[in-house]
Image 1 (cartoon, rainbow, N blue to C red):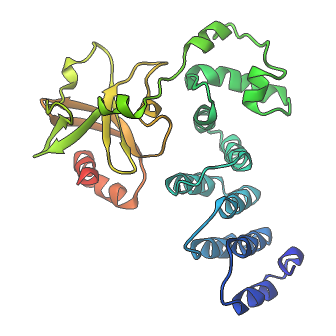
Image 2 (image 1 turned 45 degrees about the vertical axis):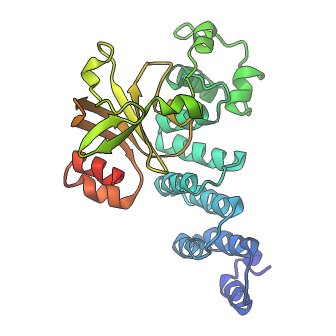
Amino acid sequence: MYSAFDDMEAAKCVFDEFSWNCVVSWTVLISGYAKIWDVYTAILVFDEPPLKDRGSWGAMISRYVQNNCFKELLQLFRLMQLSDIKPDEAIFVGILCACAHMGSLEIGIWIHSHIDPRHRYGHSLHLYYEEWCKTNAGQPFFYWLDLGDGKEVDLEECPRSKLRQQCIKYLGPKEREHYEYVVVHGKILHKQTGIPLDTNNGSLGLKWIFVMSTSKGLYIGEKKKGYFHHSSFLAGGTTLAAGRLIVEDGVLKVLFVLVVVFDDALCCARYGVGSSFFFLLA
């Protein structure tokens, strides 16, 4: 009640009188501080409870949007993914709002691709995304594209027939095993066969990509534009790290890290990209 009238001092006093507070009371307190633009205190409160539900994350994300803290919002969303809490539509809307304000078309497309049940290729999908942004249709993007006002839109630079054909492959658990590698005595070996990885043996002109799962499983394969991407390995699931690499006879020669999540990995990256890679696998 006090937080509804922006009296957060009284609200905190009442909150502190309880010996036990549920997730709902924590969420109300977070929302109250953020509502009066005290985002710093809201963050401190958000960090306190050992367990957070989707409501807690959603409250913090929505307040970041209201306070124009878009960079912090995207960082928080990444942490939410690691917590295995599934975002709801309201959270996705908040993320997309941040992308729009920051001009981060690529991140917006990634979000859309992440929730697209048809797994359509983001590079082609973004052409329709840009068209949707121009319309102000008031309809969610995928509804607009498949069922709503945009279902008849057929762009010359990417016809519907091409969009339907370009769907990203998502690996199942058994398929994923064929792409799993381990590091043994400094060499990258195929987990099933023990054969050292050599990216020179791949298809001419194709780049090799990798992802690392939250359980530190390493998956490597050739990138095939419009069909096999980083999201393919874990079927769109959360990753600790992702990027490109060049390996000769099991020895890492070049590493391009696109995503690294944990702070310790980022610190290690300062001493060398290769060392950060093996640090993650340790």
